[in-house]
Image (cartoon, rainbow, N blue to C red; front, side, top):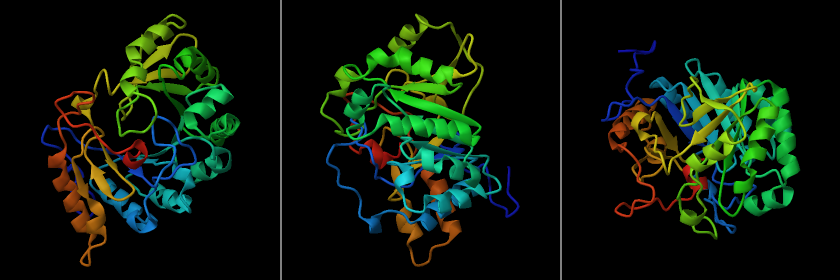
Length: 338
């Protein structure tokens, strides 16, 4: 049994299927300065301030997970960089001795301002969501975003000194399926990894039927094979992306395929939403209310750790996207934590 100096079991987060959780995605806000069609509706009602976790509460959650053996925290949203004073949270998490990696996923629109401070505060890697290199099409997908701001943010991230910068692209039929090669070439030319992500059926987020627009990553891979010489990569990350190496380039191409090839068998991740729901699975509603524990009169960090350990028994074996015999999640991606 691995224990920390204070006697806490750092191997306690094991679910009933024998999977150890060592990675959490911690949402710091449900708000965003974009309205991407696969993530949320155009007219959103966001949570009132009293219902979201304070920065102190978010830190306590992160610390509890690290005490229990989590080595990787990814800050998500919404858009994490719209949260006021988020850098104070980043700095505190970055000082946790047993945390090996602190990461952030962002739409990139504010990275030109925040890249250097995030790196200084302890963020090791940055993921930037970008779904088109055409300004008009980018605006159609994001509804309000400006491509030039995101491209400037990517440049700032590359200059800031992060261990790795990665792009995430959701490919949707009728929106951007003809840009797969262009997006890959953009990333590879800059020594940036890129991951192609299948659109997930989380909530009624847009004006299209996802079953019609979802592009399988098998199709994306076939397209990329026609342009590049790809080979399976030996590199692994703590996340669900499966990578290939590209002959002649330093960076890699990844595939995240939750719809056509679920990656549940070795899932090592849980999510905490900004209102304090510990989600044990992206595609199920199994959860525990951590906010109630954080705001209890007799709150203690030990109580929080015990609740997190107990929640591991709620983690299901797998998700069931598009399987008609199972209820589909009704929460939007911004409420889930991207």
